[in-house]
Length: 413
Figure 1: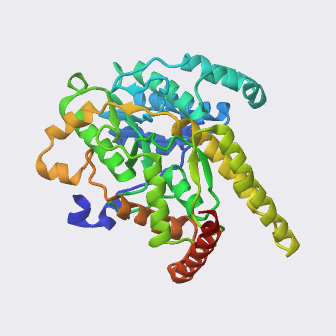
Figure 2: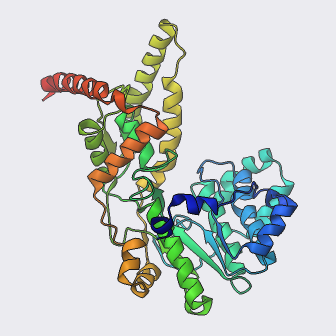
Figure 3: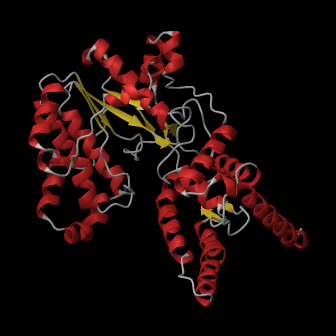
């Protein structure tokens, strides 16, 4: 609303960036800046975290869990604090197949875990990481669940909420449709499949993930803030989900097929190694054999050719990175979780019609073809650094690969 009335320059002129580090005492903020924040801040959104699922446990604890502890300590020193929002994740209590908007018991005492990581070395923590995590598949989910417990401990003392967004995906509408700055989630799959290097995945294609565009997630944070400030914590649930699967269920197969169609027909990528194809495998051993012949052996062959012509090898490195990403993805791709979003529905009823149109928080009317096209355009320009003037060449290359695929498949029909 303010942007429409006064323009982006007015908004940006009111933003001040302050350097900090949540792993350090005092948040790594200079004393004069810290005093300014204590005197002037009224709302805190704690979003700082590592989102790497394979982060070493000790580092993840310091960033996600101890960082939250330090933020809570700082929040208690803020003189005019009205609201503290801890941005967690809907995927931090993976033992619960239907997650409700309430606090769950953590897998361990967060204070004891922090203390243990402080007096143990990286090597010592790494040696017992598997035992500490137990059935939890990664350090991200583990440390996020510990962080929630720390926030819940302070519900009586602070005006705080836990906000749980699901898998945050590229921008839907604003500021730039399709924008993202990383290859996490569906964007990485889109690029890997579009480049022709992802040919097999261990995945139940009928399962679905819970996705929410980043701008819709931000809308949810803003509406939750407004609701809390307007009604107070006595009349507000202090845990709220920002999720979509209760209204929209899109399977992994639909996502990959849509992405593949967009890349084949509307927005091809440069330097495609193989015509986009492949399939999901529900049997891990079948996937393993297919990966050997469709991923690793072609990668070795391409690297041998590169060496032969005097270029540095690169494809094995790409496939190692892809394999690490798929290893994390497989757990989520073969399981399904549902998320209750009663609080979001209740907040929506409190908004007037104009507010509902401006701050969409559920029932997203998402045209998936347009959305994936915008995602591919932004991935092409911003992540892969492929300029628009190369699109005609990419289209011709895709046609050649398509013809080759047809020639190979015809005798097999």
